[in-house]
Length: 202
View 1 (cartoon, rainbow, N blue to C red):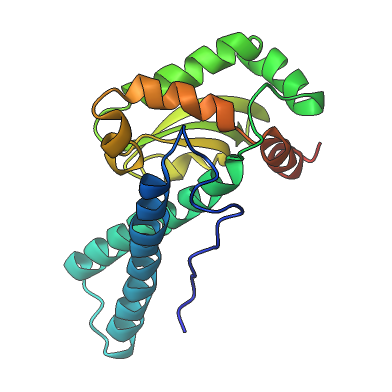
View 2: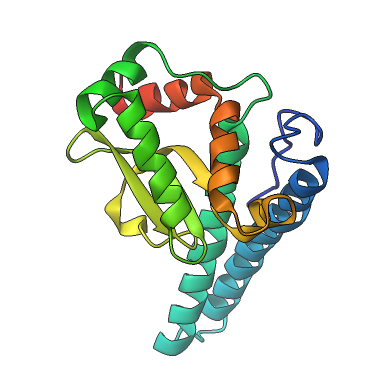
């Protein structure tokens, strides 16, 4: 039994249509996310074998650590992504999260523009992320390249927008901005607000 498991979606594969088609959602969850889970578990086993056989070398360890970080970060971000979305989503946040967005990011419209731009302009594959940065105790918007380019920053992802081509290309072709616009209609602000409260102690 592996350490990590593919989570069930909180809705069925057709629930997010027409913004995300059932075909894309099933492929994204059951194939791509599942591959990250398997990759993380397989790499943990390889690391354990290397320790048990005293085969920890600088070259080998660097490759395994990078592979583990890539797959585990993919699993973590996708697990958040599914919960961040809802067929009943959209609109805008209320309460403490809305107040924090006003204070740290210049209001909802400015925040929306910044996260949209971060997601649509990330180079290659990656994510646009609203995160809680614990050292400064503030909200930030960041670009995450691949899955794990910002892991050293220590921020806590609250709302993540997947900008990998597997998330949208079959439906939106190369027009990533159209896909990101549709994501805003699916945001589950109750989930994002709960993550903010947990991270910030609000």
